[in-house]
Length: 84
Image 1 (cartoon, one colour):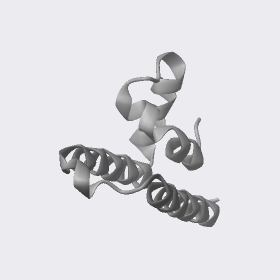
Image 2 (image 1 turned 180 degrees about the vertical axis):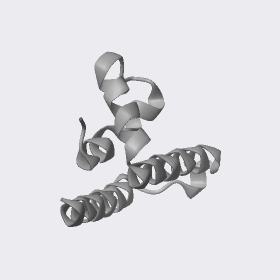
Image 3 (image 1 turned 90 degrees about the vertical axis):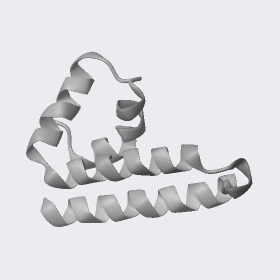
């Protein structure tokens, strides 16, 4: 079974439909049992929807996006350590 950090690392591929086969099935199984990752995927989906609806002038720079994603990933890894 996949771990929470796998969900964080590959959540965007899961939501975009790039993931196929057993890996996608493994994601569904993990999400079935892990409410934290279900919440994370919901938040990621909402973030993607909001970012698409923003006008181009409101877009963040690549550095800003990288900084936010690094914080999210670090937070998820820290939470994952607390549950192991």
